[in-house]
Length: 483
Image (cartoon, rainbow, N blue to C red; front, side, top):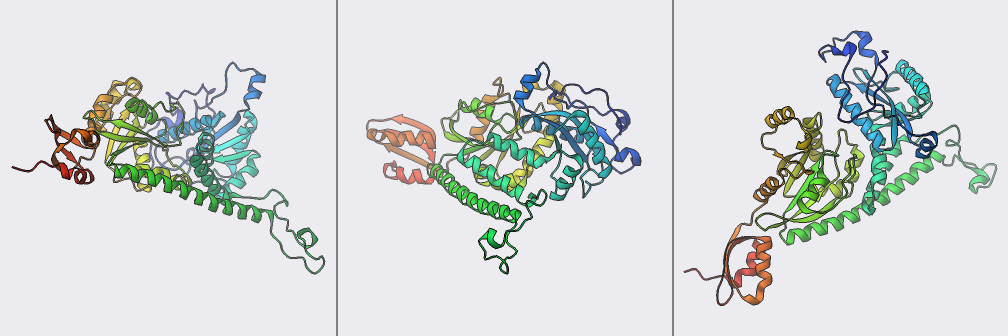
């Protein structure tokens, strides 16, 4: 184990740089020295210790003091450090204070303790030295790994999945969002129930269970079995509630379909600026916060293209690397808004150290929700925070992308024009003379169709336009005879 210099305050714009033995070019072919491969390596720059806070104020804040632990099995050291930096941001969002971060190179996580028994003891010493009360592992632990680690470390152990679920639970505000998060938590918790001492293994029988005493006592039901039964019952109830909410959401979508209103969904990595883009395009005024998963409940707003056509814009929950499958399953009814859209605005944080990695992570989730076939436009946001070199290198990787800053308004008009050109166009040409007392039909043609020519004649409004089949049938009685 190597000891790094004193940690510096964590800054999200800086990333820990490999030092010492890791200065050599990365080699994933397995040629590391045995000692170097198995060493527990401290990751600098991820401490978020508070400054200028009195002891009284600190006790009022009651922040959890955490140590981050990562196991690096593939990719480069820089990838491993970025993953831990993201875990630190997640921990801060959940309300924790990061004291220390360590990572280890292994061929695969240890089946028993995730890091191996020897390294678990080293981490226990780090926990004792820093005064941490929680250890967060950068991966999903099995129930056995979780149990064994807690026995060795003597503090609470949380994995990446539980951390993300906790953040979602803190941010959920709508009835549907709360139900979805609770369902995901229940699904995660069910296989991880474990007993403390004998309190969860006692069986009730005889008079305690209302029996008849000697000769009638049976095996009964243990407390842990009771908990499992209650969780399964709650999961069933939540699934029914969410299914009912999904039906209401589907009804709203079908209503928009009947009115032939095109839909545009905004998706992307968490904190990429999706809500800021929605505000810039529609003036919706939704919550914008520099935090992970600030948006959990989808927001639908009407917008108008430069040529006067109306469409809907939907802001969705952000994605993240290794998004828990329980969340994808629970939020499926919400994410169906993305799969049912006519156009997908895939927002990317251009100032992030690994924007291409964000795109790959989002596309993995889009594939899981059957949205991979939706026409996609890559929107690179936060260009105001990018360097010229970053812009040049990313332009080569993303030749068809739109470059904007939702904060300053740069590129928003270009994006509006692109949306108008990519929206589905009506496919029926009509030439009609609408009486002046049917102004509602004229307004509907302007709203839902494309008006090519409009003239005001003595008996009504002459319109040459493209509309959908339903509106064309309504206008049929006002068609101008050919010739």
